Amino acid sequence: MKQWTEILKSVFRDGGPSTCQFAITNVCNAACDFCNFSRDKLERSDGRWVSLEDGLRSLEILRGQDVGFMVFTGGEPTVHPHWEELLQASDRLGMVNLMVTNGSTLSPRTIEKFAKSSLSGVIISIDSQDLMVHEKNRGLKGVTQKIKEQLPLLKKSGVGATASVTLNRLLTDFDSLPDTLTDLGFEAVTFSFPLTTLDSSYLGASESDLVTFTKEEMHQWIDRVEGLKKRFPVLNPKASLSDMHAHLDSAPEAFPCLGGLKQFYLDWNLLLWRCNSWNKPMCHIFDFDGSQRVRDGCQACMVDCFRDASVQQYVALSLSDGVQALKKGNLRDAWRHVADRRNLLSLGSAFENLFWLKRV
Image (tube, rainbow, N blue to C red; front, side, top):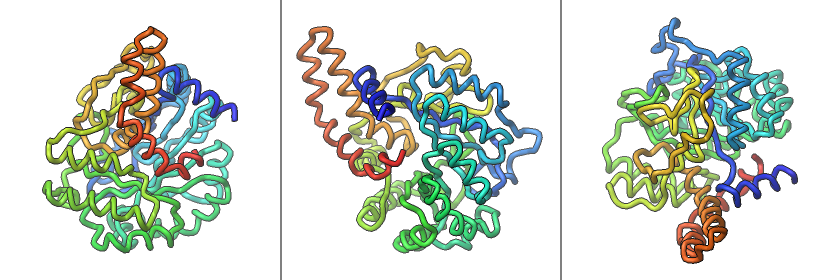
C-alpha cells in the first residue's frame, strides 16, 4: 500500500516513476539470426559486464532520480556473475524489477533467486509458434522444454511470465501462436517490431531476411497483433498499435515518446541513453542529475517497449502538467491538459493491461 501511495504522489508531482532498461552485459549464450548479441557475432574480446560496484552505484543514482521500475536485460542478463546481487540491491532501494531473458538458465535454483530478489516478472523471448524452429534460431537445444517445466514453479513463486515475440518470418502460423504460448505456461505476450539498424550501443538488431518487411507487410503484422487480443492477453495497447500504423504512413501520431523523460536505457558502458535507438547518449550514469532529461515529443521510431509504455503513462504526465499549471494560476493550461482527449486513450491502454500492472 505504501508503494502505491508513493507512486500516486509521484504522478501528481511529475507524471509518475520513471523506467530504466539496464543492459548489465552484452554477452549472450544464444545465437539468434536477427540479433547482434548472438554468440556467433560478438567477439569474445568485446564482451562487457557492468562491475558490481558500478552497478550498485548506478542503481542508487537512478533511484535518486525517481526511477521506480528497473528492467534488467543484456545480452543475457543471467550470465552476469552478479545479477542476483544487482536485483536484490534494486529491490532494497524500493524499485520494481523485471528481467528479459531467453529462459536458458531457468532452474529451481534460479527461480529461488528470483523470488528472493522480489522479481516481479520475467520476459522470455519466443521466435516462432513452432518450438523446434524457435530452438534452432536461438541455438539453444531443449530451451522450450526447460521453459515449460519451470514456468509453473515460476508462477508458484509469484513471478509473472510474459512472452516477448519479435515479428519475424519464423512465425509461419500466427493464428496458432496463442496455443503454443498457453501450452508453455505464459500469462501474456508482448510483440516487438523488427529492428535492422540502431544508432545506439544496443545490439538487439541485425540485418536479416527474417525481419525485413515492406510497409504493407508491417501493416498486416500490426493488424494480426491487434486481432490476437481477442484470444490471448497482448500487452501492446491498441492506441499504440494505431500510432504504429500512422508511423508507417508518415501520418500524424497521437502520442509522443517519453524516452529521455520517463524512459531510459543504460548500457554496459554505463552510458545513459534516452532510448536504445538514439544516436548519442545523454550522459555517463555517474553524471546523471536530472538536468539531462529531454521532452521534445519524439516520434522517430517504433521501439515498442518505449512507445507502448509512453502511451500508458501519458495520462499521468498530463495530469501532472495540469496540476503544475493550476499551481501557477494558469487555469486555461490546466484545463487543456486535463481535458486532453488522449488521456482517455491512455487510461484505456492502462486498463487493457490492468491484470499485468497489478502483478508488477
